[in-house]
Image (tube, rainbow, N blue to C red; front, side):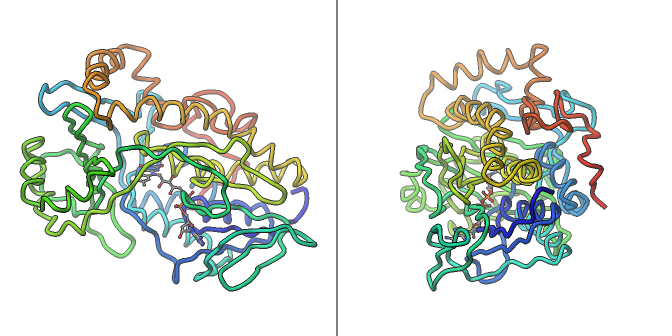
Length: 413
Ligand SMILES: Cc1cc2nc3c(=O)[nH]c(=O)nc-3n(C[C@H](O)[C@H](O)[C@H](O)COP(=O)(O)OP(=O)(O)OC[C@H]3O[C@@H](n4cnc5c(N)ncnc54)[C@H](O)[C@@H]3O)c2cc1C
């Protein structure tokens, strides 16, 4: 390590917890702040892609994450009316043994938080961060009640509404209603993300997400694509006509829908796209959703935050602070740019009002995707390894990232 720094991590979400662990492992003095009154996650489930699992291993949280999550071998979706096979991505096409890890957010949070505690760190709760300023001796965090610091470096991991980030992301018309359900007795396979579409106007999906830390029952993340400006209509319609429409789209959904008895069970997630051109300033760096946002169509957001955390720790290891922040961005920029572009290309194919785009998806993109080498490429894109995740890192140069990717020999357990 070059110099031992005092670092404040603002935000204890996926990126913030991962950053705090990575920086602590690198020997820095780390404090973590969040607005929540006690550590807790928000939201339903997600897929930690193979590249994100590697980062979890390196952080020492991989074994716990795998114990709570469930393997996702395939991403599969069909057009409900025409029956066209629209989406079919197999992770192992990109390398033997590769798979996603379906997880409830609470479980991913628990795996990271437990590791944080094991390293002797605590999240300081009930801290509403409103800004930051340079001061003698470093940068200071501004909170509702005063100032904290100074610190050598502040890491902005405050997510998509960060008051520290200048990013103005472009809101997307479509978001999705999400909820967590029990995985019922069903013919829908529990080893994949399954989706049904009607053109690109409708999309419904179920994702197996393993279990919560305090409960053994297998869970599902259930989502229904919805235009943000149609939320009030959806709420006004009531559940019965919506369930009828969903069953018409996909009759096998019945045991999932039976668990939804109140519209309040469904939460609308709004999506946006955008990336900071320069995600750092003097003694301040932005990572995760505060630096770059994309719709979750490619399921990469958590992985991006995990990779950012790792890149920042590596950069601070290799260069003094002033040079480390641009180095961090050089490591991450290429990978992020490719994935942001892929997300922009894919999102309207699944969430838009355009019949032409849906036609293009089913008649051109999907058939081409079945012809070699595209299955391998699609598997690599989903895995997060279509381009090197951390440019210039000797341990992960080359494609695809080998299944035995180990960094500094620092592995889980
Ligand atoms: C519906 C949905 C599905 C998704 N599916 C996937 C998927 O399958 N795979 C995937 O990789 N990604 C997925 N993502 C994206 C992923 O969830 C995000 O990219 C990831 O959570 C970003 O992590 P983060 O640490 O930047 O922000 P967050 O995880 O949002 O954490 C931000 C933290 O900052 C705290 N905070 C915010 N503001 C303040 C403040 N002012 N003061 C103090 N604390 C504050 C919050 O309490 C929170 O703890 C999905 C996102 C959504 C919305």
